[in-house]
Length: 139
Image 1 (cartoon, rainbow, N blue to C red):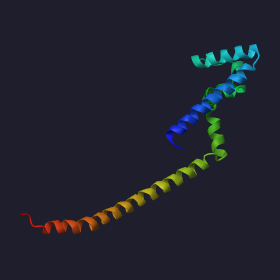
Image 2 (image 1 turned 180 degrees about the vertical axis):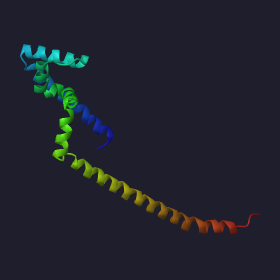
Image 3 (image 1 turned 45 degrees about the vertical axis):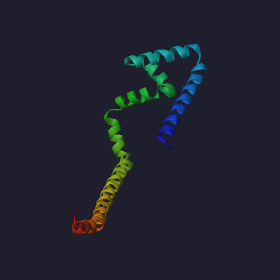
Image 4 (image 1 turned 90 degrees about the horizontal axis):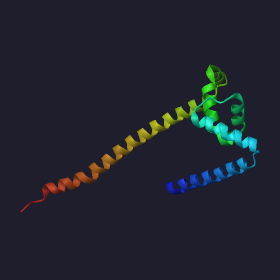
C-alpha cells in the first residue's frame, strides 16, 4: 500500500467516524445534546468537569474518548504504578525492547559484513583495472 493509499484510507475512516458520531448524536434526546455541548465546551476550555459531566463523558467515549483517557491518566496516581508492577503488565514491552535491541545488533552486524563484502569486491574488481591503467603508455 502506498503512502497516498494509506492517507486516503485514514481520510475515509475519519469520514466514516464522523458520520457515525453524527448519527449517534442525532439519536440523543434534547437534554443529552445540551449536556454533550456543555461537556465539549468545558473540555475545550480546559476547565475541570463536574462529577455529572465527567460521568456523562465517560459514558460517551466515542465523543470524548481521548479527553477522558487523558483525564484518567492524570488521575491514576501512584496506585496505578503499584498495580502495573504487581500484575507484571510491562513484561511484553520489556520483551519487545529486548527483541528490538537484538534485531538492531543483527542489522548492524549484517551491515558491517556487507560493507566488508562490498569493499572486498571493489578491491578485487577495481585494483586489477588500476594496475592496467598504470601500464598504459601515454603519447
